[in-house]
Length: 274
Image (tube, rainbow, N blue to C red):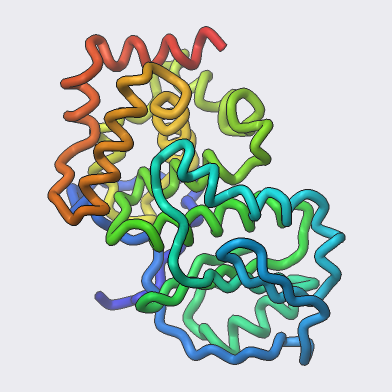
């Protein structure tokens, strides 16, 4: 691998050539040197919530409902996916401003994409999330912490599914069914016939190749499997169980087509009737 760093940022509106690749791409594999002090010199608050150990440069009460959402996030993944909580700790570092966030990354992860608002970092069995305070903080942290929980529970996560699940769980629990920002764009993609097929999503092998449309399509397929026909959710759970057991999972698209007659029609009907 020429560069151990990967980014979850889509090249918005870019065109790229599809290249088949292994399903088991990790979203991020990182090398890092850990320095416990914040870029500002010290953490204002530290808190342990479930599997998350938080370090913040500002009072955590300023994050609104984020602490409550993080507390329930492992249970949400268990209820939806039957994935157990991690045995270890996930460290979450929250910075007051973009400048201190970037200084910290420059000192600890000099090759990391510092233009991103948040990052999930994994090295061996260690998982860390970095984010800075913005109006997107809660969404960013829920998204990256979902990645951390998925990679703690599974030896690998297919790229499209990793992003689809993180996008699904990035919003507050009450907004996951009908309130996600991706919903309107996904519906228009379907109406205009430009929705990415699941088989095509499975072939995307690079996060840099992931477009905004791919994020919407990945979210739409995850939403269908969680809220659609019971056999779709059962298929997803069985697929993840095989990955967890280190059994070759094959193609989730093929599995769904085997279990659900007229898969694409039912997928579109699921979204267009809401």
